Image 1 (cartoon, rainbow, N blue to C red):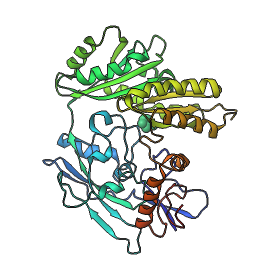
Image 2 (image 1 turned 135 degrees about the vertical axis):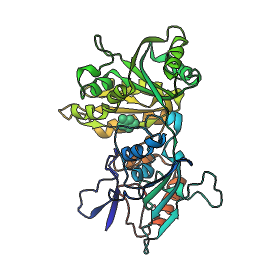
Image 3 (image 1 turned 120 degrees about the vertical axis):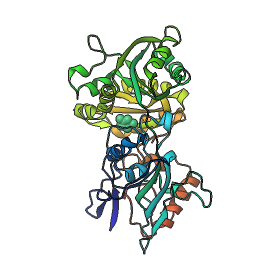
Image 4 (image 1 turned 90 degrees about the vertical axis):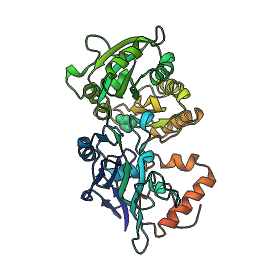
Length: 404
Ligand code: LAC
Ligand code: ZN
């Protein structure tokens, strides 16, 4: 029986949900929660796969430590490793991969071999880094049962402002400015929200959540976060004052928890508006605003009944170019996908920035991944999973049968 490994089922590309054939089972890791071990002095943790991000954070907080991956959902650590989750603080701390020191994995071979790659060493070149093969594999090579993580010192102050740029043309200069002028603090998030995305987030919260209450929502808002110790708030004000002349139209200080509540409510808010076609894309940082412009033009000209809601992690060059369809169902979704992915490719970007590969975007993988890379990936999947037992049947990687 083919099994789809599933953590918290918070994925957004459909990879952790069985297809409708009735022949695929769910292999849930949610009960793998006992035995979490934190090395407080060594700043590492060995985490059973079914532990939720929030539970890990609760366990790390008393030690003044954090696993610095921030996102709206509450996934399991095993799922985060399998998909190589990104989130809002990648610009400062990197993605999950950068924090994985080792894994324990059960292979789908005849013996269900338990592969012990569970080191917490920061330097270990005694073998190839096989554990990294499983990070971002989407559960297609083996089932991750434990993850050894590098964790970091928790900042004591996190300061957020909503910053409205005077035009989109100054956004990249502002990003560079905050990275250089953070003083003893550090720029840990630089998120972009379009007016539509902001409205979607606010629709899930009460009226006091609106940082721009009393006026219209800006067409582009930036949620900027600096993290550090005492003095982070002052460092933020100094950086705002030193910003290039005329680059900031408005700036509002809002406590971090309230700012993030708005940001993290966007996906839910969009869902309440209608059917959403998600595009989780990235581009070189210098191209990502041009990509956004082209996406706006594309939707306005060719899919005028749909609404583009752009938001995401501009600081690392990724955006969610999510499209809310009209209720009448008049949008040709296949055409929309093809056109949007073509734009992303034109800008040198990726069709899957942080949500992985699943049935929703598998066709794009086959269409755009170089043949030699596809062939090698297929060979790897066959080596680890010769009987074709693991992963969503619509994943593009070949588990069995003749090589394409
Ligand atoms: C976010 C999810 C959709 O950034 O990745 O809110
Ligand atoms: Zn995201």
